[in-house]
Image (cartoon, rainbow, N blue to C red; front, top):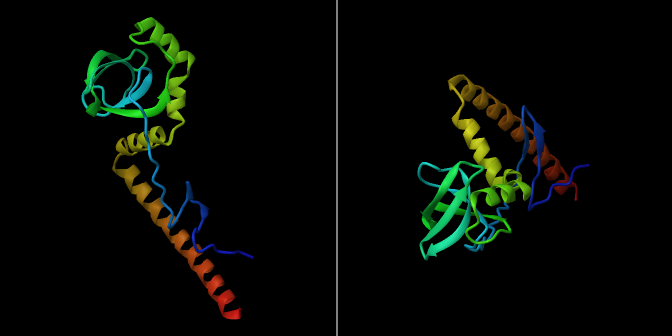
Amino acid sequence: MLVVSPVRIRLLIFVGLSVFLSVLEHRQVKRNYLVEVGRVCLINYGADAGKLCVILDVVDQSRALVDGPVTGVARQTIPFTRLSLTPIKMNIQRGLGVSGLTKAFTAQKVQEAFNQTTWAKKLARQQVRKSLNDFDRFKVMVLRKKRSALVSREFAKLRAASAKKAVKA
């Protein structure tokens, strides 16, 4: 016997992809990440966009000295408007050298930690979608239509079952 919660309806269907739909519930998370030495950032604009870097020093109220030797970001000052702060913070000293930063970056497994975040997974999904050709996009469209039809069918069954249950009660 299936019981449908009025607040949340969960359907797990496999049509090429497993899909989890969460209806009527969207959570906004407040992020208060501090600009501090050791904070891992994602560059969101410019030639290094999409690369991880680490704040080594705060130059003034609008710029930071960053470096990302493992990710290919040269040591430079970048405005905070071009940085997106991540929840990851490294334990390093202010103005650490390239070799020390490289060792700390690999020892603290920063890249792996970032790859586990939903943010990194979303960026990877976007990158895959961007690289699709016309036929791949067509196949995705067909799969989405099939998934939508299955979800609609299952939802109609659940709605009919709950309507019968309500009538009997």
